[in-house]
Amino acid sequence: MSNSGAQANRTAANRSSAAPGGDGGLQEALTAQGEAVTRVLDEMLAPVEGPRGRVIEAMRYSALGGGKRLRPFLVCESARLFGVAEAQALRVGAAIEMVHCYSLIHDDLPAMDDSELRRGRATAHVAFDEATAILAGDGLLTEAFTVLADARTHAKAEVRCALVASLAAAAGAAGMVGGQMIDISPEREGLDLAGISHLQSLKTGALIRFSCEAGAILAEAGQAERAALLGYAEDLGLAFQIADDLLDEESTPEALGKPTGQDANLGKATFVGQLGIEKAREKAQELVDSACARLDLFGEKAELLKQTAAFVVSRRS
Image (cartoon, rainbow, N blue to C red; front, top):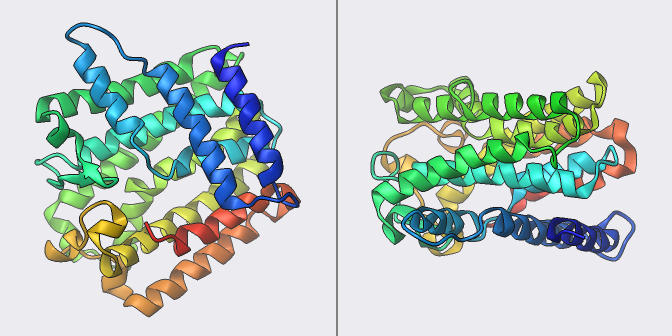
């Protein structure tokens, strides 16, 4: 049995105790799934000798250096709704985590947010150097599509193509990159609530939407199931961002593992700035309730996804 197959079996065993009705819960499931994705990433990003080994080291530093692994978890949970093989879901989860980590590397660069702290330790351009960090981000982004295009991700070429096309749209100028462009533009300061929602639906929400839809793509599920997952993802992404804004306002760099107050210091419009703290909390809870309701057609199989929606607004980091 391959390393990926063996770790998939371990994850399935862990999940049996974390599923609804078992002895575990969401945190146990997040931990088990996160460890499984980290093992897959470790295998995919194996160290190499020679001069190019430095960029692999930087890619590993960023991809294996912690994080909630929320997006891979959403991939694996959406796939579980349809009985998709765990090993396939983990490969897609690893791909989305590569894209997420690439975005963090580039967000932290001096030309963007100029951050020196990420996940409680030095950002990639500080730990290595700026040029290596840029290449590490580029490497993670492109490697993600190599993973999706591999026959081990799905036997059917049309499914692999659908995954590639969906992730490309989510990560590109119509998705995350476009959202980041809005975020650094002069117009960012004057955005109203609708404008902030649109920005975050691109910058943060696009990858979350892909993560939730990926299981349905792998399963070749019907339109009703896909629509339910996409609706859930829309609500989840906005709730996640409101929670981020609240943490940025109320938490500390030590608790978050990254700088706080940057948007406020730059005069950027945020959900908290537009709504106030209490109204922002109320809006986040409304989105959680809506997200959960969208999953009712899946019954008890969606329980962990519903718990995840509650988790994103109650988290402390």
